[in-house]
Structure formats: structure tokens, C-alpha cells
Image 1 (tube, rainbow, N blue to C red):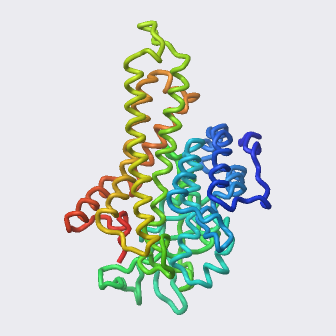
Image 2 (cartoon, rainbow, N blue to C red):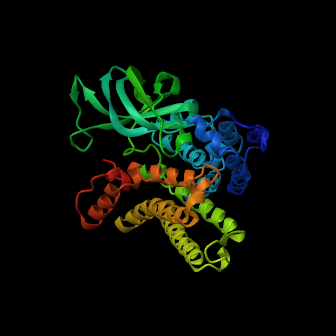
Image 3 (tube, rainbow, N blue to C red):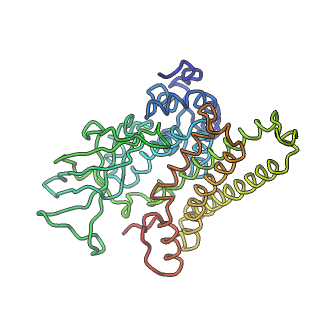
Length: 403
């Protein structure tokens, strides 16, 4: 059951944020609210309706809507900052915010009529898996889509759902635009047209509601399909990796929350064996300093690489090999470092950390689950190394490369 604390901060629709500073301030306001209901979120295994409304009221799902379309127009750096702030409150809420705000990014690849008319709600939430696990058979006017997809984070409260498919024609796989063995295309449909399957019983990110979903012989009009390799517009957000850039905000925010928690804990704690305050205990001093050092380096890598990439794209340039890989490596490193930090702090706090009142238990489980995401796995490092050496990436999409 969601407590009344979820209603502690409400922003009427008439005062939705129009600038990055306003949205960042709203996100900060939500940190204590989300933290107070983290247990409720985890027990619900999805974001409760009250929490989703809190995020909507704060303008979180509209953060990527361009200024000319009535949105705050946050760039990738600012989007990551918002996600990082929310993650200090609750990892699942931040994860769903990061996923759900992709609607205006997908709009860069869809026909202008769809972006203007059907996706015109700046607070529309999109969920779903873009990887081609489904089958789309070409028929007059569109596709007949059948498949089952996993990891539909936020699908329990989404307005729209994306589903990656390989295209077939007359029962046979259709070659890709470059003549490759498969034609990957992403389908977009209202959430109610998919069946959501309650599979999300997990160790971490339990509140993200990342359920499986499926469709059988679902008709999807041609105008509701797109490829990340063929944007309709130009600019920093008409690139395949646009939906990946703000992902490291979640692990960075969780690690920050854990460090703040342990530093506050240390202020009133004493090492029993040595009868020494934690503030004067060498192993505590070392663990905290080491964690701060690693988190600072990881944050600078993420934000520094994002800023360099943004400058290139805003100037109309092409992202070079090293700049592309720099951002990817910083992203993977953020997930790795965050889990290392929280694991170290968990061991430092020791037996106290195993009890549920300690948020360290949930943070460690959340980060362990995050590390299993396809964008944080070792295959991404292989792909980055292959790209640098002129070899074949195992997962080119993780680099923002789509044929």
C-alpha cells in the first residue's frame, strides 16, 4: 500500500516546468518523497499510480520535448542529471523515468504526422524492448506482428509500447537495408494492444515493473514503424544512441545515495572492538575516500564524454570513433563502479546492512540487477574494443551503430 507521503509534493498541471533548472529543482523535491515510499514501490513490483503521477506532475516524462514544442528541451547532460537525482530517491522510479521519457526521442524517427498528432502529449510515457525478438510480416498498409518481449520497464503505466522485430515478406526473412541477413524494425502501438505478462519477480529493480509482454497477429500501420538507422530529422537526438545517453544517471545516483547514507551513519557510530569513533577509524576513512574517488572519476567520465559528444552533434559534426567509444566506456564503467562502491560500503557496515531497514540491501540488489542489462555487459566492452581496432562489434547498437 502506498503511504500518504507520496502526495507530499504535488505540482498542478498549470505549473509544469519550462526550463532545465525548474525540472532539476522538481527532481530534487522528489528525492525525499521517493525515498519514503521505496519499500512500497518494491513491494508493488511496479510504480504505484501515485508515484507515476508525481513524476508526471514534476515534468519528468517531458524532459526531452523540444522547447519549440512546448517542452523544457533538456539536453543529454541535463537529462542524465535529472535521472541521477531521482535515483538518489529510488532506483526503480529513476529507471522508469529514464525509459519513459524516450517518447520525443522515438519521434525523431517516426513520420512527422505521427510525431505531431499521435505523440503530441508531451507527458506520454513509452516502454518496451527495441531489440528484434518479434516477427513482423509485411501486409498491405503495414505489418502483422507476433512475438514476446522481455524487460518492458514501466510497461504497467505506459501509454505507448515499442517492440523490436525482424521483418518478413511472404513468410521469408527480409534482408536489411544494407543487404544484411535481417531487417530490424521497431513497432509502436498503444499499450492496451499488447498483453502484459506478470513475470517481474526479481532480486533488484523490483519496482520497475519490467514485465514480459506479447502480441499475436497484431496489425501495426507502416507509419507506426521505424528504424533507428533512418531518422526523419537532424540534430543531437536523431541518432540511435540518444536513448542510451542518460542511462548512467541511475547507477551514479544510487552510489551517491549510498555514500551519503554511510557518511551520515559514520557520524554517530563507534567501532566496538577498538572503541574508536568511525570518523577516526582508518578502515572507514579509507573506504569512504576510495568510494568518493571512484564515484567522482566515474561521474566526470560520464558527463565529460556526454558534453564532448553534444558539442560535436550540435555543431553538425559526425561522432568519431574515439568519441563514440569514450561515451560507451564511461557508461559501462558507471554501472561497474557504482556496484563496486555499494558492495564495499555494504561490507563496511557489515551485519547492520543485511537487515531490511538498511537501504544498502536494496541498493546492492538494484545495482546487481542493473549490471545484467545488455548495455552494461562485457559484450559492450568487446564491441568497443572491436570498433577501436576496426574489427566486428558483437553488439553494434550499444555503440549507436545501426545499419
